[in-house]
Length: 464
Image (cartoon, rainbow, N blue to C red; front, side, top):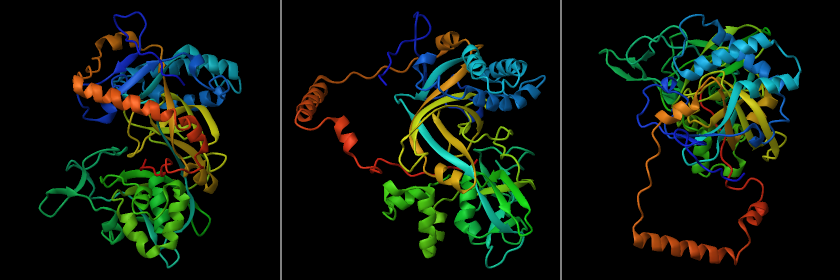
């Protein structure tokens, strides 16, 4: 798609809105989505969105109405002071009045077009963001440890503190100064994955259940939820409850850096294969990801989908996890080519999604984790995702973007290039142009690259 002309909102008649925050935010959830650091927003037309007309808008509307429920329950003081939240509440009131709409595609599409403005979003200077996938594993487990079931899933430890204080009841901050108080009442980092797998939590009776494989337990932590089928057939539903405060490290990246798995082969399934084949090295590799996730029991049923961080059930193929700078319930139209039908990214994905979840590794204005459902097949598909995509955020029409643009500082001008340096740059450009006339075009080279070239990237997701 050609690069669009960049023009400014404010004193000019027509404009592109560049939003660059000059001060850092102390809490991600306190950042206004209209003022995200190092982010650019470009208003576009509905007709500019590839695949917009062909999408299932009725399905997207159903998912959006689900996200409206917690917003509409706020009767008085809004739970979120940001303008986008208040504007979304107004849209949600109209969605509630519109009813379910059933499969009426025309009405659903009209609702989105009448109530939102499409705005392309990306990091400053970039045109695409990053897409990964996640799912809900279904595994066998036991209430008691045994040679077969020896990998525990833990509930939140009682000595876990945030900035030296006991965590509040309810939602646990996704990013926080998490630690523990030692015998001298001094705050120190909490046990990392290596220490926990070595027994740091033994004797505290924190084990919810045991499953067969430590890598399977780590995968469940990466996904943020699971269904554990116990010996008597009971389905134990677990969901994310807390983390140990350590940064997430992708073990897939470590395998690539150590030349243990080729980059073009990387996927969650390929990591699983390596772990099973190299059990003597697997524990050390898992320990490179110091992050650890704790769970809570949410139900004893196999029905329905897990709840995301917004507190509403996720919808396979319509729910996404996003950076906490975004307001839950915000719709995003995503354009990407993804490996859904096969391991190659040949499926054209053009779909309206709704932000209903987050994750510690989901960082950036154009970053999303696509929820794909439960079970092995959903896991195989989600495990292949780590691909670029174009993000369009749907902002409520209640927001006055022109006024926002007037108050927003413009990007700093680029420094002048010295004449001598500019001459060298021009000479290099001329040389490249000459070389290009002697070699096949870049388009031809791309078409001749084999599937799974080294440009492919490993797939890993942070905790929810």
